[in-house]
Length: 315
Picture 1 (cartoon, rainbow, N blue to C red):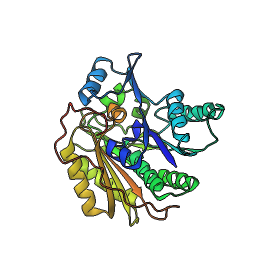
Picture 2: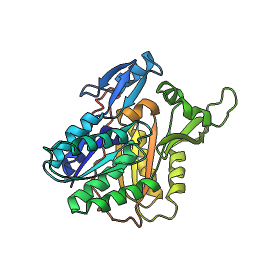
Picture 3: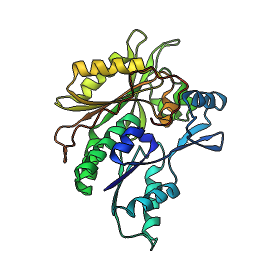
Picture 4: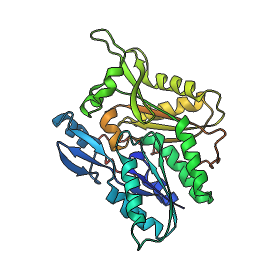
């Protein structure tokens, strides 16, 4: 089995190499001009684009041609392929992938193949947890239909929320529709939104008062959605604040039955609408899955401070 995904799933180069997963790069459109993610792209670049072109910066998923190129290469080495996509509600990834599958099937030079296309309904470190399950399935030699079924089951129970420093990032990234769901606050209120992805769409899940610690609110939310699960995989993402991400991880490990943590700086497409200083947590209950994956190696970033202008390409 071969596995491919898009870069919005925030899978590190180390994890990609460990499992042999192919990553098709997302891109951006800035004031109508397409831009590809490059080695020199940084958090500061995204901040600059959003500042100069508010509301005119958006992430775009891979086109059908890009998926098709990867698919042809993969099926020539293995006839079974799993395509795992970040939320198709944020970008039309599913349609592009399905179009690519049809294109490749019509090519008589390509040998027959089986393919499953899975919409994770989420993004970033949450989608990365599903990618790691797919990677473990590939290494274990589990059947393709069983792995796809496991991913779909996990996608339906996984939760992904983040504490946004303000609503500005959400507004300038073009996700204004979610603002209508924000609870009303008094003039001059310093409440910050607690946002999440629900069935692939951004929703306001609550608000954090000025006196509350964002990481504490995230821990409480994680405990709530974890319920009685006895085994959790956790994703922790941050918008340039690794110390806060480490603190959040430590608190989650103290209070919940955490089996595995994947902690990383946010993917570029996520940072675009979460913003600088955002802190995110994904909670995946791993009990009673159709197929139980092994615990992956630790692919979290190092504990060294992450420079704000560092490259956003996976390390």
